[in-house]
Image 1 (cartoon, rainbow, N blue to C red):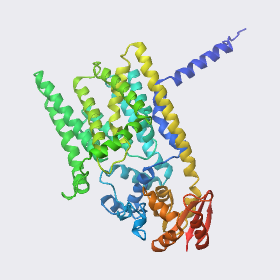
Image 2 (image 1 turned 90 degrees about the vertical axis):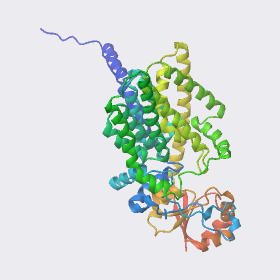
Image 3 (image 1 turned 45 degrees about the vertical axis):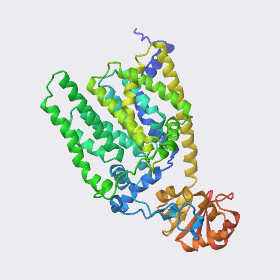
Image 4 (image 1 turned 180 degrees about the vertical axis):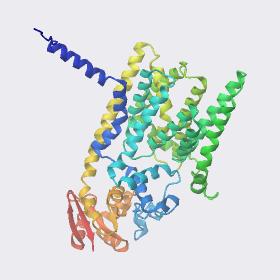
Length: 512
């Protein structure tokens, strides 16, 4: 008689536990989690703050009116307010600016991507996922780039450093264009390094048409890296193969020809305009300290300490011998030009205070840090890893918490947008102007940046009544409870002169 012998239950459990640990600890799973976190956070929170809703709106606007891409004004926005009576009610006089168009620093590619997704899917969720998927692509390409010279473990460290870098993790979750720029630039330079000429020309052209800074980064990196490589070969008395000359020439000339029409039309305007004005030391002294703190979302002294740790690791990585000299020259040129672009941006009038413009130059930093941290003595390796892991984890958890709160606030506006979508077209006076434009597809106005203008209108019933009477404002959105941002007298005026529509936590006043 045959008897089957089955292993003890505790042995089976240990076997399954070992398999689960192996799966969870595999490089593929870790890499997938690092790359997929941006989409998961966006799907969970739905947060879109700052200029993110404006960027998606521009994509939809191109579908509605392609002329916007070539200079037509955005007729949806009057976010700096209409001219008040008397003009002294708005001391900054920002209302004098005409309706906005496509900013001169923008290229067409990011907005065309949003437009294509909207045209194909007509889905806000799909548009929300454009940048998170681009962020995932940058993480994967950084891993692929690192694997050309580093071990699998070091490549995974490089991908993890980039994916968890607070600035990148933040802006790869919402609809800003920097993750798209980083994806195009990394893909183009990877193709250039691997001598894929056709791919380099196409991807280099796409990168050059992303945003103004990518013109400097792509052509600067390829130009500097090729010149240094040729000089090094000459010093070694090595002849440069003809295919290398042809590849480098194509990598510079091809994308330049692709980008030239847009550069002439949009940036230069036949010599009548330039993409930036003169640099300002006063602007730099004001903005640079803010950029430093926003790099890691911590006070300046903590940011300096963190930069010192990362810089030391990058120096060790650059001196480690992991990268061939031409490759090291390219990585340093890539990172160095990114820093130069950031400093120029900080000194440019009209720029913001966010350092997100450095994001396309973070992949080479990730490679250098990964090569450096693995070559430190074990005690220092543990200290550096512990500091960065804890710091990045805390900052990222806090920002994800902010996303959760911001997403809940935006969801509370959904009844407002449903009401407005069913109404005839008319300007909406609302604090959530870009979101209203994006989700309700109604033009919107507010008193952006000028708080005195806002108070003079929203807290004085006579000024408010005259403002509504003189301008095409058809809807006013206010919280259902509380007085902000309108005074009780203004609310009373609206109750008597407008139709009140309840919309969840808000009230939509339809002005008669």
